[in-house]
Image (cartoon, rainbow, N blue to C red; front, side, top):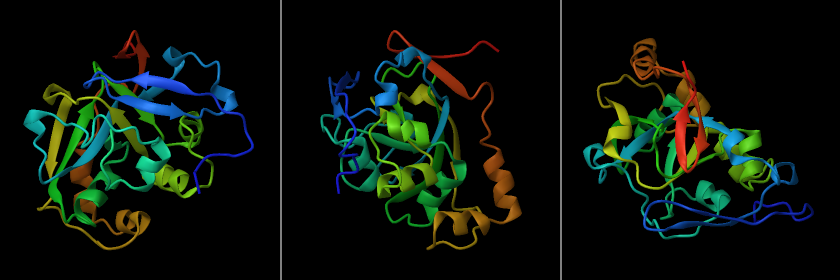
Length: 219
């Protein structure tokens, strides 16, 4: 299984990050997006990440293999392998799930990242259109995981000043742990949902790319 449609035409696009010249490998793009202006694509301004025990938000966040050339669908399918992406999510609940439900290498801390002025590239595969845009086949395992967990892949160095909020998770009350994401979220106690609400972003939630940088829309 490749995660790619075998009967649709594809367009190959090479994109470069600002982190040591690492590049995203050629990616198939759904024909619908062949002539799309990148500056018209809105992406989420705020994303969340459950930190690994080896990560320190005060030093910023980097991919485990910045020079790798892993296709987005493969990176989504095997998030434990080293690739050129910093894996994040649009969902606070999904970040908590990754921090606590299967958190053997977890630092038990969630960070909110504000991507305004991010120098790298944002691959939003959290929804149907985003998956098509970045070559993830509809109803594949990668598609189902990416959309369910609202995954957003970052290429490039996430500077410390982009980390806008943190939440330590050991004190949070949890329901079911070793279960599916939907069951985990459903079982979260009310007080925990209130604490997650503290990560609710301030300002507009979508941004756009212009001349290699991301900008917020005027308030």
